[in-house]
Length: 576
Image (tube, rainbow, N blue to C red; front, side, top):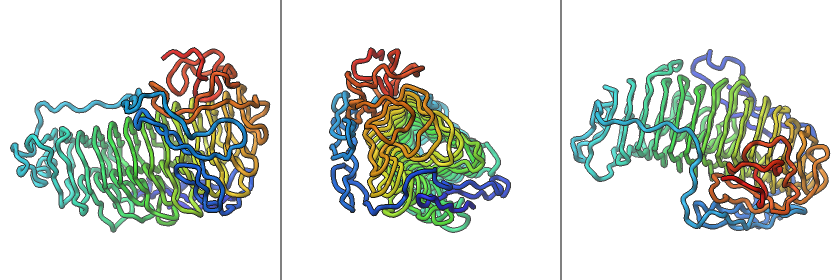
């Protein structure tokens, strides 16, 4: 079990799991936070949460964050604007509209997702052509035999309700052909892969299935209570083109994780082209993982909740959508949307800790937006909490998230390299570091990163953009961030050149260009995957960058010299 460490700027709630195998984690327990970085004031100031759509005053009367523009590639129009209190510049994240046409289908990220398994000659077929023949008993018989399994329940969609968990012990593929939903009837876990904690086989693959109303049992070890829809106890799990809605694990518990899926030890969990909505657990509202690799591709997480409180020791509440703990495991997310999830303690969207400080975390072409850590007087990392990892983030956006401490992204220890990333419109409503919080001086580089319109709204707070020390800034654009004291950064970072900051004061690096970058609203540009804030055609950021990446966040070839920040200025010569 991990210990709770108190930050100088407030409490950082450590949410780390224990293993049933005493040798898996040993005594090398990490902390979720530790001491706060140097500099800055930390009194809470009594400010309340900002309005979700911006403009409205918080509980203490300070203005809320600007509203993010909606992704018109999906919704057809920009979101409502807010009244940002940013001093100077035009980097409000409100009142934006995307270039994408109203109602147009959102473009798909270029991620390498596994393909569906072709089952032209299945080993077993559940059902004989009627809905009544597709029973839980028939499914269990097929699962016991293993192999490739399909359904023949008639032409209409069918729901099979299980009252006793379906157990797999053999290598298996289960394909619902987009016609079958498996339900736990709000009383039973749906599927269980029964292997061994230290085993990577067998692999269970589920594809083209719906999972509804799975409920994992309370009682016993915390790590055995997660996975309302699917529990992987060793072995490996692949989930392709599935939909998880309304699955739940127990609401409290220090190490209870994964409202929909929990992977425990063994091999890996791979998820692609799937959706997770309205799932909940004490930790990891949708997905939980302990000591196994986790890969998620082209999937959407919305409305999931980590319902625990107080962290660890305590009753959980870590990772509104995704919770992952362990050591040297790999976490890979590509083309993922994590939006409107909540947590009771830390990491409104994602919580990932490597206790041994040798794990990796990769995020590409993804959006982490509008997630929240719920308590009014505690909790941190509204978007993502990442500790002890080699972090690589590319072509992604962290926006509109909020928590008491740090609204957007918390990076603790080891190394982080962010390239073509936008961190915008996040709010810390009780403390410092609205955009980015650095704990324990992580190394690495922010290369062509835009940090704009983030708000530390409480009285007496600092560092609306970046709180803490560590990282080199190169071709980074920092604009319109808000805090009562030092609205930019509380300390200077090493400069790699090509940086721009606005307004003047509380500089984040030595000798940046100080000028208004004339940023547009946060919006998804035509042909893009993630929302960005594009500098105007007259922006001082244009042509400022040195040794630039080949493309910008939108995947377009950069000019030479390039524009500082995540995307090229409006009139730069771009190649689709």
